[in-house]
Image (cartoon, rainbow, N blue to C red; front, top):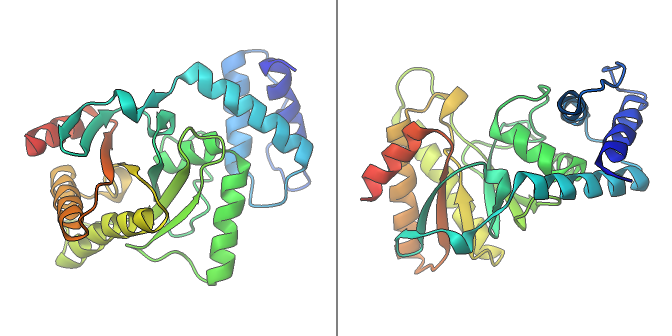
Length: 257
């Protein structure tokens, strides 16, 4: 199969599932087909997936990842010892682990083609990730707590693991409890990374965006928590602060300098 055949096979297979509510003809435009497939993956609830579907999905995502490009940590430049700043799409970064800003439901974003990091990670990892996240929630018997972290495989992403953490939602101005919880997100991820032999980790800007944490305040907490952890734990873990927006890049450049 080529990519067009894989994409159309997956669209038909997902629309044929009994619980699928998205039924439409397959468009002729390539980008519209990609968006339709992504949307179908986004709205699919955790459930077993036929092995043939998974095989073709994995082939499709592997080829798509090559097309999108991969950035290896080895080409990044340290700003401080073991500290990096990189602007780009975290789902294209090859390091040991990336951090997902998850929601308390923990199984990802169900809005078709939404621009949040959770949606991108679930999309390009593949359907296996949502199933693994669902199993974690099933075993623990409740939604994920704010400030905690869990580790999963990364499946079709170029990293090895995904660390999922739920950041605080800020209503107006961050409270001391919000600060504690945000710091806990970074510390929990680092502790879990060390426990699993992770030697490099990329943090997104947790709780900024729709969770409304002020960007500069969040960056200060991220930096201070990481630096304290590395010193206290005598850790040599490589930490990448991943930013997507120019505003966040400017903040981190200033604080790291």
